[in-house]
Image (cartoon, rainbow, N blue to C red):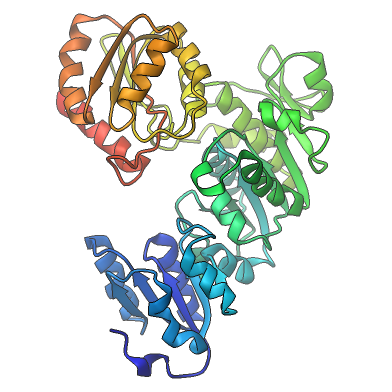
Length: 465
């Protein structure tokens, strides 16, 4: 039970709902500007308990195993300045609706960070796929060129961490990956540069329709002073005329695309800026055409900021890819094993599969997102020797593969561990150059996130090899 005396003070109490990374840093930042903070968290994991201890040292009240229920908050409505909710809590949550009906300001961690950092240059990066790679890559390019440009947001580092550090260090650019959830709750965010990587079906359990999802993403670009789009994405290309003015990048070689776009790659792998060669692409570590798109988006932003072509090229030589994204974890005896756990939907899985030459053995499965898997099945028909399925979606995916004309082996397993136990002798008997872990589904049936799923896959492989 919360001590009523803790709240019976001037109206500057801020409830933070959720003690994940974003909630932790939101609470910490609010306390640093002398706000009274109360945190509610619904679970009591070891990590949560450690964060609780740290926040309590700052005179922040933390209540564990506390559900986000309006009746629990109602007695303290008069003392509340704001309620800060986790991005995972939808806008139509009953408690949020009731709070708003009672005039309570409901915000997210992004709103708090923006209020503190809106005098700093922001780059807002959104998209269904590719946004994390673009965010990480662009931050790397800028930092290697003597600009303090930390990556933050949905990429895993809360923006409030840098708001908290603002008094100690000057930030040149905030490079922010912004999910649709974060954009939805913080429409006031107006980046200097906005980047839209891709748009495909995703998160419809939250946004209900594809039109709503598109509208949210579009709003970030509309709010941006300068905009960069990926022409290779079918949905963005289809909206070429209706989107706010900006510049476009493409890896297409046809005349129509090149005429519409400001950045492209020629047949000798030179990066072109408005038909002028910038530099030859000979030191870029990432695989696949989708990563060439990501690179062009990052280059376009870096050039807008004012970096010289040579400086951009030089920075690429030291870039290291993020884990769980076409990450080679074993390579020996003509066998390469690749972890692409970040492939959490069919489109990102397709991009990864297409990035790899030759025939593959594919591991897929998890909690299915959307129903647009016909193109994924077509790609598997041409590239996969065998498909191993695991988890919640395995039966549905097997049925879809058979109906889609897949004639080769499809093997089902309840979980990843049992699958890997079987696949080790299978690989010895069946010669194939590449084993690709490409789930094409979310991780939430058996794992807390795609990182945990990828780490467990790597550990299971390491134990066998």
